[in-house]
Image 1 (cartoon, one colour):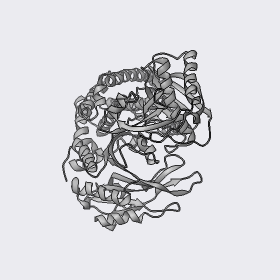
Image 2 (cartoon, helix red, strand yellow; image 1 turned 180 degrees about the vertical axis):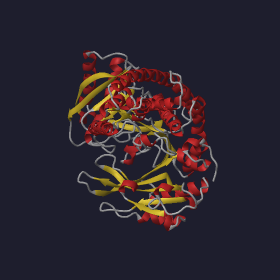
Image 3 (cartoon, rainbow, N blue to C red; image 1 turned 90 degrees about the vertical axis):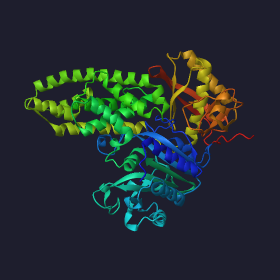
Image 4 (cartoon, rainbow, N blue to C red; image 1 turned 45 degrees about the vertical axis):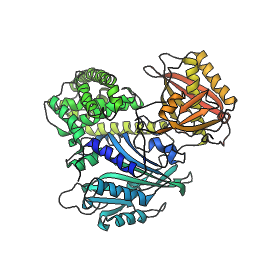
Amino acid sequence: MKRLSTNELRQTYLDFFQSKGHAVIPGASLIPENDPTVLFTTAGMHPLVPYLLGEPHPEGKRLVDVQRCIRTQDIDEVGDSSHLTFFEMLGNWSLGDYFKEGAIQMSFELLTEVLGIPREMLAVTCFEGDTDAPRDMESAGYWKKMGIPEERIGFLPKKKNWWGPAGVTGPCGPDTEMFYWVGEGEPRGNPATHDKEWMEIWNDVFMQYNKGADGKFVPLKQQNVDTGMGLERVAAVLQEVPTVYDTDSLGKIMAKVRALADAEDARHERIIVDHLRAAVFIIADGITPGNVDQGYVLRRLIRRAIRSARNLRIEHDGSFTPAIAEAVIEEYGSVYSQVKAKKKEITDALSGEEQKFGKTLQEGLKQFEKVTGNAGKMIDGLSAFHLYDTYGFPLELTKEMAAEKGLSVDEKTFAAEFEKHQEKSRAGAEKKFKGGLADHSAETTKLHTATHLLNAALRKVLGDHISQKGSNITAERLRFDFNHPEKMTPEQIKEVERLVNEAIDADLPMAYHVTTVDGAKKEGAIGVFDERYQADVKVYAVGDGSFSKEICGGPHVARTGMLGHFTIQKEESSSSGVRRIKAIVSGGPAEIEVAQEASH
């Protein structure tokens, strides 16, 4: 095997697929744009949804990228050898170009010939088939053709080898996953027979169906390939280290944690490394700790890291989290310039949250003393849960402190209260994030277009300092966040509404053209000009572009008159220095045309 550093592996992947005709495109922000289904970008496919649904991509039909991702559904697994909340996903894409055979050939070539992984250390799985779609013998056949023996090919159900749809309806299909042997002795079986002994490293998704509202799976006209390789996991394989935390990049951050610690505990060391690396990247993408949405997840990650620091007897007076952040920035700043550019914002936010949590813990300690004063021999589960929910005390901390006083904790009642809390959170999330990534209905397309008109109108009324800080669209309404230091006056809100409706009433044509990032800047298009690889972009113009000209992936309506009437329902604070508008459109046609590329 080639012993590559993490940085070398990242570049090798991009270079390989570029040599196969793929355009290198930039990874997107961790904060999804116009996607109500998730708080964070959890996979490389999120920013590419419009193109997977048929919108032409400015860079063509073959793409490759590195996407930073956040996933918190396995947060309690973090601390083992391979789970991470923040990770980098390497992905290659075919938008109606090559399909199963091409994807599998390139995956096998990269793994065995470029990276030098022995084929006997690899196994794969394919979809086993059900009433919706047949057993994927096609993929299995291509793997056999590549030299993977039959005993290394497993078949698994939808839960394991099927992707999507992201919402109730939309693109979906079988996938084939690649695994590396991590068990004892000689490799044997496959992940269907020896699950724990094989570690997943890559996933090729074959989007070949569309699930309709009637629940039926219909073959797609444009069949796509969507892949994802875990950078950290493959780095661990190539560097022949036992865990992702022992790779060169994470190992340097781990060394910083150990230098500060006065106790040893691998699980808590790993939690700190993972959670604070995630926090650095989330803050770099514009989020600060808070009580809702992404801010709440960020706060939870920071506080979990601080609780682990307590277990390692690390001082946490406001200097601990910034020290770890500096190690993260030093390691990743050369690849992700935004973390280096925002070093002060990152360390200030972490220090502030660390100090705030320190005060909360002190209050919790006072509450703990009150509880134990009336506890008899056992702390009741409701009080233990209150310490967790209000003061951030995990059950383990309460049990540890109770044991010091010769007390036990009613864990059964705590578990029941915790489950109620989880159910409430899940129900709230389902209600809040209903819909799906694939919801590019007439209504969401109208509202997406309306955000362009709103953005332009805000700049005309409030000033050119206005820029988009977030956007969330469902079929019912749009939510638009923008930077502004003060509450808008009723007169300003009315004037923004008037300008948007004036543009709608003018029934202006809307079209896009493809240009370079520099070209878009020169022509005055607005957008978030992140550090990116060389890439072309789409610029959508309303009319002659004098009202609105903005970088965006689409889709949008062909004429503004299709929007109907625009109404601002609410203007409020989102966070410090950021305002939020909620608005609707009504009365437009049920059927719309989609904006096309401008004719030259």
